[in-house]
Length: 236
Image (cartoon, rainbow, N blue to C red; front, side, top):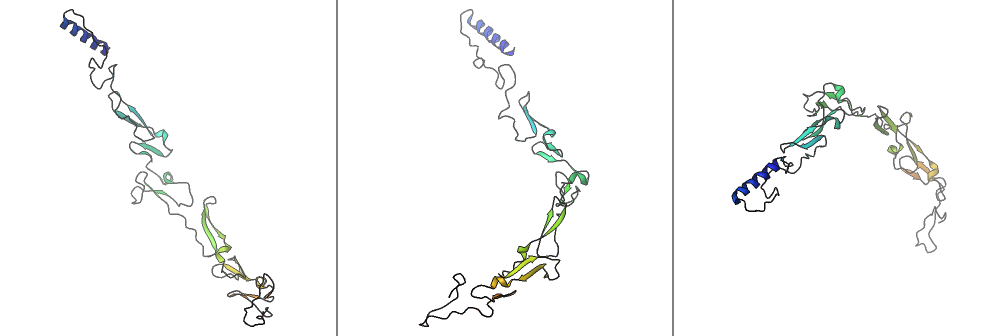
């Protein structure tokens, strides 16, 4: 309607000026000088630059006066969250310790204490102290088992390895022969016995010892050649 009134007014004004003479009049609203900042139907122009605020939980729209409006939609956030303009989804402020419970055993017991210096500024929750699983046995792998809601201590033979080739090392803290770390070591003479050392034996601290009747290989006829017993070739 505003467009038609504007056009008729211009036409009447021109007709009065020319006194009945013919004159070509443009109906282009730009040529007629529509007031800046309006659409052809008289409505406001779109919001410059758009209204997307980059916050996923707000509904963004351009209002009738050409300004942006951002409405928080709380239902788009998690069950314990609120939508905050310019921030997004944040945790609700707690009122009880239950509000802060993360449902995990190993993270300890969370509590609601908005006055605590370490409290989350958005929620008021204070993190729990992580469960520390530590026994007195050096050869067990200690960990917090979330599925069992308990600490577990599993024997790990690799933690008893003494780098002695002829010992069998295992973690057995209940064994009366176990050392302070819970390790038990068994000497295995068979590892030390071969063609060159048929009566070899295992020393738990030193390793293999050749023992009596070890093969001796004399040098060649010239007396200037080195000789050694080869266990693979089973010969000197």
